[in-house]
Length: 412
Image (cartoon, rainbow, N blue to C red; front, side, top):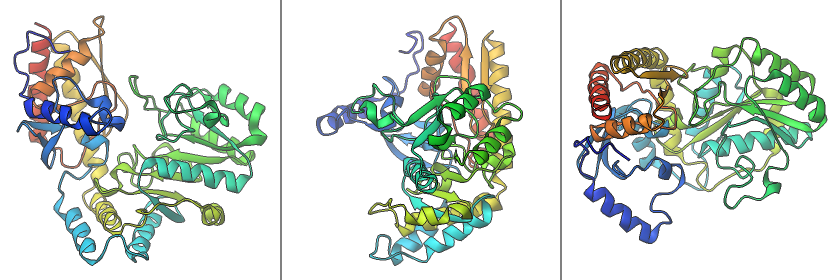
C-alpha cells in the first residue's frame, strides 16, 4: 500500500478497467510471473515502448529499470534488431523446414561463447534448462539433479517447490538442493549421491528473490568444476538471466571456470521469443539423441533478431556501457538514501542490480517502490533489476530526481 501522504499517484483508471475485463476471460487477469509484479496503484498494461521508456494505457511514462524482466538489452523497438526480424519475417517465419538463419545464429554463438561448440534453440529459459538436464541424463545415464536452494531455473515441474499448486512430490523426487557457497554441503551431496547425480545446475552467482545477491566465494567454481569432472557430473550454468550482461563470452568467463552446458535466454534477442542451449563437443551426440522440441522452436524471425542483437552488443561494447551506468546508479541511490538517513543495499553485478532498503520499518522499501512508480520510475521490490544499453545520462538524472522525491514522500 502507498503512503496516504503521497498525493502523486498516477491515474490508473484505464489499467484497472482492463484488469477487471481481463479477469473475466483470463484466470487472475494477468498470469505467470507478471502477476506478482502487479501493484494496486501501479501500471498493469502498456500502450507503447521506446528506448528506455514505456507508457501505460493511461498515458503515464516510465523509465524502465526492469527491462521486460531481462529481455530488453538494447532498448525497446531497437531499429536494427526490428529491421532484421522484419526482413526475415517477410521471407517467412514459421515454415515447414528451417531457415539458414538458424545456422548463422548457431555459428555466431559458437564463435562468441567461450565453451560453445554447438547450439540448440527453444523459446524460454525453461526450455534451455530442461533440455540441459535431459542431455546430462542421456550423457551420464544418471538421474539426479543437484541445485542451489532458492535458485530458480524456470517453471519446470522439477524446479518448483513441492507445495506449489499443481505440483506433486514425485516431480522433484530426483532433485537435491544445497545452500549457495556451501562447499561442505556440495561435497556431502557428492559423497551421498555422486553415483546418481547427472548434473549440477546453478546461476553463475546467486540472485534469489527478496534477498541480497551473492557472488561465489574465492575458489568456489574451480572446486565445483574439479569435483564434477572427477565424478562424471555435467556442470550446467543457467545464464538465462545473467547472459550478455556480465561477459559476452559467458558469465563463467568472468568468474573463471568452464562448464559443460550454458543456458541462454532473456536478452539474447532484445525481446523476441528465443532461447538457446550451448555446449561442449563432448556432449554433441547426446544433444542430438535427446528429443525435445516445439512447434515454434524454429521461428526464423526471432533467430534473425538474436543474431542482430548479438552483433550490436559486440559493436556497442555493451558490457562496459551497462556496467558504467549500473555503477553510477548504485552510487546515486546509495548517496540519496543516506541523505534521508536510510541504508540502501545494492548487490549483484552492476548491469543486474538488486536494491534493498535496510530499515527497522520493514515496509519502507515497498512503500518507496510504490512512490517511485507513482512518479514514473518502474521498479520492483522483490527481484533484481536490469540495465540496458539504452540507459543514458538523461535516464540517470530522472531516476535520481524520482528516487529523491519518493524518499521525501515516504519519510514525511
